[in-house]
Image 1 (tube, rainbow, N blue to C red):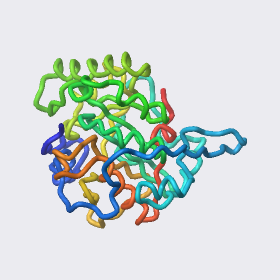
Image 2 (cartoon, rainbow, N blue to C red):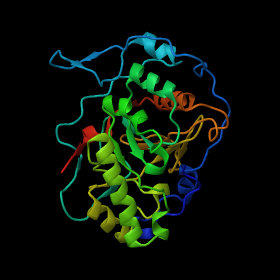
Image 3 (cartoon, rainbow, N blue to C red):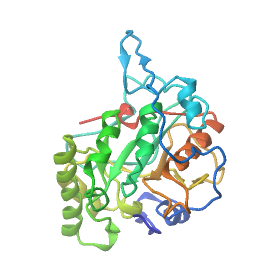
Length: 295
């Protein structure tokens, strides 16, 4: 699991050191109110959203108030149609870009979930009901005991991306070791999930802007490095900006974590709190992949 991070390399300018320190820490906060109760998940057939052509999109967010209420939530505003002209355009070769938000005037944010240690079946049930989009950055050490857990989440349209084999702070290891970590995870994820990752996230965000890591990522296949603007703890968000507000296109970092790292709280309850914090500021969630032109 991720622990307290390191400062980023300086080539990017100044990303807040406190954000790095907390982005991969356990976080804090009181037990949230309105959290789902423990026990068996009742069987409720998920609703299906219609596309503009009238066909059913099985990956679109649910619009069924009963399903949202089941998890202690109000329905989230549906994701807007993604732009035809993708704001992030990746290339097949050359230096890979680093981004922590998406240029857009839509009132949307993007959720990313890292690591993969916690494998809460209630979270899968929740996502089957609500179908909130997110992107997974999975690390082999934490997923190798149960690769299958993440396949139902992938089947809901959520892509699986590269987060190294063993989660080292990348600035502390050699270029050869960096390639082992990135290329190794690239091979595992491609083999287990049938799709090669096109995005990479370095553990702790460390080295994200370094030329050495950029070269290592290029050599292994991903075509962009993804950082973040906010970090979800247990009940609230931690911000990298002083105004402590979400902005259009922000990327939010959360983790597959359970009670041992969430002070007794469940991942499902943490995710409920995350959705509430997003809704409180008038945002909805969109799928990161839909705003990227892949190479």
